[in-house]
Image (cartoon, rainbow, N blue to C red; front, side, top):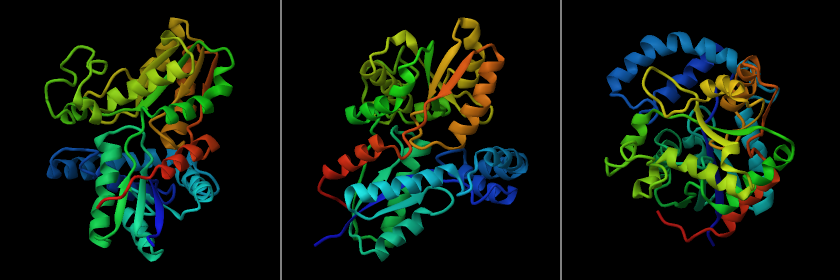
Length: 341
């Protein structure tokens, strides 16, 4: 008999809010060639010469505002989700992080120690992006090949347009949508526009064809922006909202190059003048609330919006460890396909 198990994968967090721990974490995170995809020598010079001299202090202060007594919000939430998913499926569930601890290597070692030989890998990213879904899948495949070459595994594909996932999002947002609001802003994590073009195998569609996200193309399978737009469209439909009640923007820019517009921070400052006074914000690129949703949106974003003349700002929490999300993931386990190497 084979022993099945589940592996939850997410981004990760620093060990603590101390500047050295944050620096170590950022070194690993920003040193990933799929996050900052410049040539290695240039990436090293940029990181060690500029970024890691100034950013760790600023990031440590930001982490300090969201840290909980149990630790980093992302890790705490993932642990709660792990326990609930284990209960719902009756299978052992292990967590691994792309950066920081528990590392992908530690997670695979745990899988081996538990005698699991058939693994369902669940990246906690609904959308495909080189710097999120792709990097964590490539990393876990490397560690599986290195440490457990004979282990069978199956990887959950991006679920941005899965009707059951959309339904879970709508369900989780219902209490907020039932009250009056002027607009619902979907704020997705940003990526450089260059990443979109890089992910387009045809090199002829992405950012080249007018309204490229809406024009069917095979490159949508790996197009982050298309998938974000699609999640929004399907949510709007399923929640019975009108298209003009909803807007998409992208947050967390970094560095000088052009990122996918429009930018969340600019939209938050402009909206009150456009008559949007009561704002709801959702961040479906993240399945768990973390620095980018709590500090960047709930704290800074709210401040910017209110300062610009907004009257109410509410962030709809991520799916976190909500029952609708536990059910979504456990239902995927039930329909587990035959495994492959």
